Amino acid sequence: MRNIERNLSWILLLSLTLMLTAQVIARYIFFTSISWIEEFSRIVFIWFIYLTISWIILQGRHIRVNAIEMITPASWARPIVFFSDCLWMTFNVLMTYYGYLFVKSEIDVWSETDILQIPEAAVHAIIPIGFGLMTIRLAQYMYRVYVIGGPEVVYEVEKQEEER
Image (cartoon, rainbow, N blue to C red; front, top):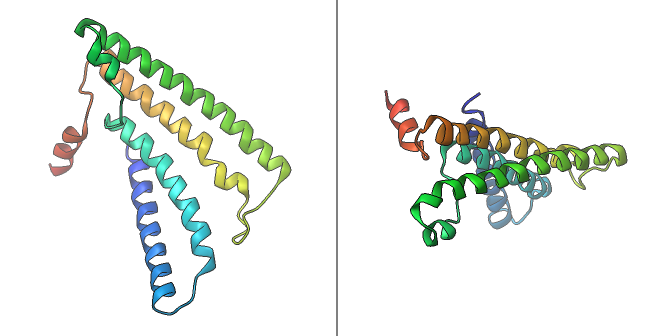
């Protein structure tokens, strides 16, 4: 479960690379186009981004604007970062909820993509899934950093564990 986003992200990235390579070869060597690849690659790319974000959050490698930390006293830095993480958590929870409502409304209306006839609800299901995963991973990150006092960035720790 810990690496589910990472593994799915690698699969999606590999499939995206293969599809786009096939499309480029078809277009510039055979002077034709594979119509479904453009639509499917957009869907795969969106799913890839959302899943990768939750993986990056768990590692603590997410992008953070820290200008306020630089202009405030050092003793305020940790509470400010904690507050910003709480705001981010609130945003994720709201996006999960409203994403769920959005997907539910798409199920009620029922529409499909133009070429592949994939239900739009399945395409947009990544919104509540992605933000739900981000919420879970952010909670794990906050627990590790603020409660246990562990490292903010765990990439090096994971890398060392994998090499053993």
